[in-house]
Length: 351
Image (cartoon, rainbow, N blue to C red; front, top):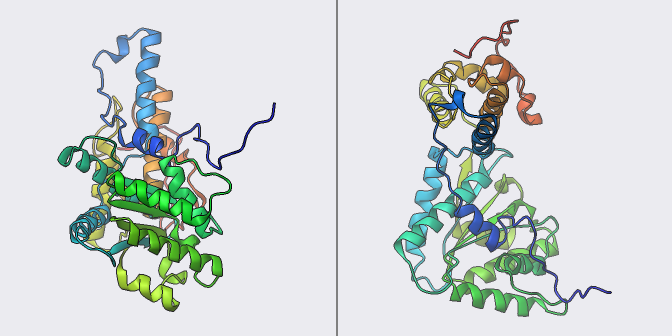
């Protein structure tokens, strides 16, 4: 029997963040760390397996740190949300820009999570409410593809014969009705204003921002060097959007070193290991910086991966061998070492 293809959109089984179902699952997730049990050694095998599984699942999730950059982004957008409340047009927005792997998407999603939770607490209202929309721009996007991404997030059925105007009107009507006031657009560097398609995507986003009473926040890789602010359209974007840059952590000054150590301490405090001594990782800040190049995502992956190995092998503490065993992303692995790593035949604790 033939399958009807009346719609371009079918709800994805994995419910990504770019659908309202996936966004709700993620924002509504229980983020309470599991409690360490004093009787963990006496647990029956099945119960121990379940207990360890809970901790493994916890460490598999990204440990988000409220860094100064995330604080700056959240504060800036909170101010913009108020400033834009009574603006009919020309609403102001924010662009988060920086190199690959510097935490732009993490900052963007955490901003959305914070606003979603605040909205639920401060402004409960009857009926459906969708305060946040999160989409990513696909490569070589067209204006219609962007409109479909908005419709996909909302779960709107899009008929193959529907034109751009029909989709846009449907999206705007729904978002106005559900009280959306924050729109997050990731991968904005996929727009090239030098092409006709890129220019039309820019115009489409601008049209959405005029029709939807929301604050728009974009994120992309080095957008100031990608031509997003060039030409007539670029100058218009530049006149309406502030920018905040994400960068790797530095280690040059005592203040920078203090920020890096504080970050390590925060990640270390989040661990759920029975034998790990607090502060032992922070004393190896130079080694951790050499391994990660100051990238928050790489550092989180390194520490969480070592914690997972410590649970698997039963040591319940992170050792230097655990850290050395982690394979990081290519960019982190290519970092030059200013001092050689010390290796030992014995598996000593990190401390």
